[in-house]
Image (cartoon, rainbow, N blue to C red):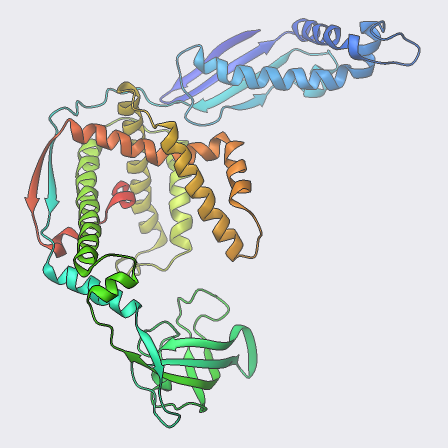
Length: 455
């Protein structure tokens, strides 16, 4: 077997692999010798059939397997023997006619082509100067959180049959929706609860029920929003025949020890303490998001090297699919596809560059993701996917989803990647000079964070 480097342009590598027909035949004979002791053929005692006869019987099938094994082995070995790491899966391009190779009439010759990961020296992250915005928790945040909890615990008491529904009242309704006089899928409900003013139904639906009484029949006319989840309904006019089964008035909930006990806590002070801890965690998450964004900006600015085109293309295609399947932001509505594609390709390049930089820093620092954390993340993902599939009507248990991940290393790698990224970010932050800067709550919430940091 001979492996020859044909070309090396930038990150592009192409190798020529030659395997003489004689070598292939030797591999075939060796494989037949291995299996002949297990072969039962009519007219021969077990293990006594000559190799020449076995070659006629099984040679073509086995030769196909041998060729596949060689191609798989050499496609990787051509790169690893030269300390090169493919950025994309190596692709074989055959020169020989495979039928002739299988028949032993030709040598096996093929090119192996792939891009490699770039070799670069990552910047020294020790002493990297970073600013972390922090904000004091306004007292209003705590009060607002308490009010929201109290609202969630609101109970409702039936109004009199002649009482008209008011804003904040809870109505129990039956309804049937129609478009052009025809009922549509998902447009029918019975004993549904709706709180007027909660904006949980289609815009305009709740407003038309204000003033209704128990037993009333109300015709509600609405227009589904253009961006409605169901494309079949988006932008269409609909009429709902609504039967008001009952009207209930909200009862005030006191924010006191009794409310806290209802939630399983000892006192109002205990409840306030828990809320404050949760808000503090939210603020810390926002601060870290800003800090991570600043860190990634510095890493992006501090590295300049050629990127594997295949990786950039794949990242761009993933981004563009998301763009096509979602509504455009106001700032993007007047831009052409060509202008947007240029912008999103730059984002794809940034993501690939940062991914390679973080991977290299993590590799040199021997950053590890503990198996316990990985398993916990896999189990959480399996639970989320199982619940989502069940909502779609598919009966799949978390154990079945978990089994899928356990049998698919690539799927596990997709879960491991963001965990590894966070570990590397932590590693860099620990070695950086981080200065806290006090900002307002609004300033803390201005910038995108976390997963958006790569943009």
